[in-house]
Image 1 (cartoon, rainbow, N blue to C red):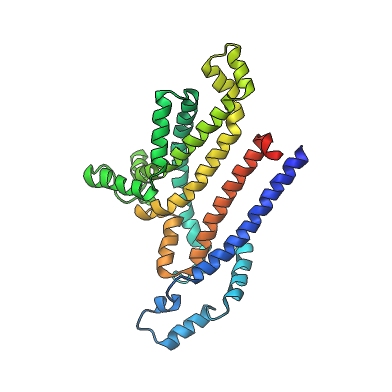
Image 2: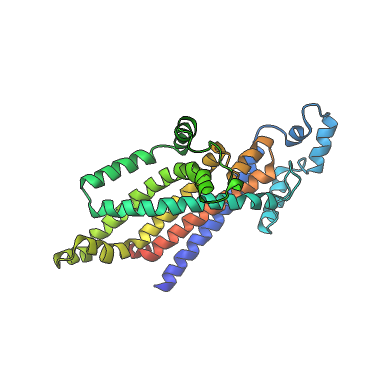
Length: 317
């Protein structure tokens, strides 16, 4: 049994590595297709063709794309992310300065959304078919249909423009005390938590209902166990695997939403750094940020997959 699980985990890790290689190929050549010449953008419209050509040669942009891809991939595998075209600084240093901010935003979002989603998902499954269950289901389905940019825009209009309670922009460096933390993170966290929580509620509810329909949960009910005891002592421990899977998948979805939210609120994270790099055609920075997001997403999805394999014997057959 352990060797079977080990082989399946190794297979998932192998798939992840192959996917990373394919993604690196797509990321590199997709950024190559961006319109505009980075040398022309850096030198300005008044630059002479000779100056643009000289800068392109200095940046090795005149080499074939395949050679530059192999060189970039080799640097990536050795931990060298290259040097920013625009800032002339190591890309790793630029990203590390923003990564802490993005991780803080993600951590606060997870701390808010996970307890709320698990509570609503488990209680909705416990009282399946009740008015409470229907209300939670309708709200979660409605919320999951709303994109992050719409929630973020509505939050700015309501809380910043009309009510004036919160700033329209979020700057993490201004954090100095609990009130500042609430003011900085309130709207980005609300925007991200909306969709993430809705997905987690639905997946948690489904996992608990699936467990409640098993024979041992039915046996516990026939023995006279209360609904609360059946859920907490029989269903919930066996649903922890699928719930952990749901959390991992929802957090991976967070990576896509954070790009929109950081841009709308000018939050100084990695996503905002990547969007700014696109406007200046800073290719090494764009590629490194894109790979960072892809790697984080693949890691979370693979982790969710492994949790599902370990917790659910049916997936091993």
